[in-house]
Image (cartoon, rainbow, N blue to C red; front, side, top):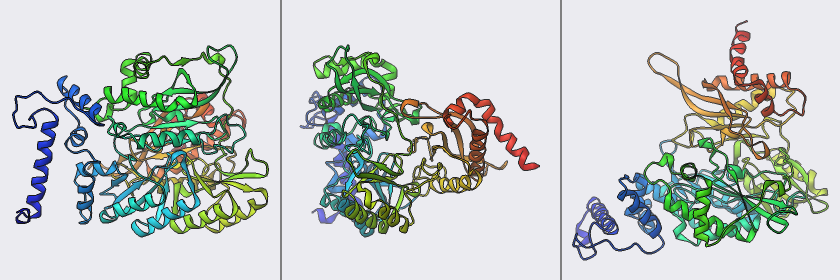
Length: 595
């Protein structure tokens, strides 16, 4: 009889059945069909989420659309339906676009009428054969290129609907996954890029990142959070992982004699980082043994699951629970989950962290292992062709330890390169049109996808970033220190513009009385990370994209002219000069141009 219905009628009946199931879940109809029966107590892995939704509604709140979609059909339960519909080649409905993100696929129309797939790569480390395999998948199912992201991850674009599941299946064949890489889930787990090879590090983050990655994947109750969630592990090495920008950051520290706990290597807990909302994670005073990280992170998440905002997506991150409750109350709830008190140590008993090398992700650096090196390769705002990827994989296999280490700076490292193979690696990389050497501007150049591939972005961030780099290299040849320039396309701040020395966020600039607009940016300065963590200050609004290279040039030229010496960082210079003096530089540049 089902064959008597056309496709549209079948979809209607499927939607009707999903709706009835959702009503039963909320207690509107009992399983027997009577409305008067009390709702059943939710059970199973989604129970805590359903209870949180119920409390929201009971307290007079209106669930966000995404919460309703999760309630109507769990994205994992609906996977077979999603596959069947994708095989027809049709674009997904908004609610199914959201559900596909649980599996790592993002429909990015109107920027591109295709999916983007974001992977999960714990600590950002791949074997050479996995890296080459991803290139093959990008050729077979995508656009023939990939991007390194600011979570030390890879994304592949231009995947048509019918190629989505085959691409995901190919990842499994490579020992990889994209599960939970998008939507309201815990994103790729980051760790120190030089873990295990850094002479300065206190702790190798690779086992911790991998363990937490597996903890997430094997517990469905940790999917479907009020909003996305970021976790990072810092091992104390010379190359930062930007853990202070994460919801949870674990920092390896050395606790000294005289503390309330045994001296040694502990993990310090920082919470609440979300730079797109102008906040950096704060030290809680809590320390824990490395083996305790999973249990503590799990408890932190479960408090968030129960108390995060499920009505307003703009306020649905953990930061806003911390703002409302305060850190003491939140940590008390975590301790209740754990059934024990967390250890706390006065900062006076913690040895200061070793310093950062802002160039450590570029060029040749000696490893802790004698005679071996890591070599950082510069990528043009994170992009690689598949031919380049396969060639780079061969270099890693033949000249190094066979690993590719992605970084949060949108590039990667070769590791385990013997001293006598360094020159060969540099030469082979150069032959691919890439470089292991970078100017001060390119070494810290970061850009999100931009409007070429993201519907939220107001500007072509990657294209404009390269124009800025080209201009600055020609106009400011005396730049002799690293300066980070971050371009992000929208308020989601995927390129973390607020922590750049110079940060640009996409904006539409009105250029006529009729309301015509062109691409442009608001510009902030003075952001930082690590020991200099700080949210940048806005100095200019609505600057046309064509004028941004000149504005960056003006800032850098003024920096070189007015710094107290090479030891004064750009961040320190901006703080000393002050926002008013920096704002005035735009007017001075216009006068010079007029003359």
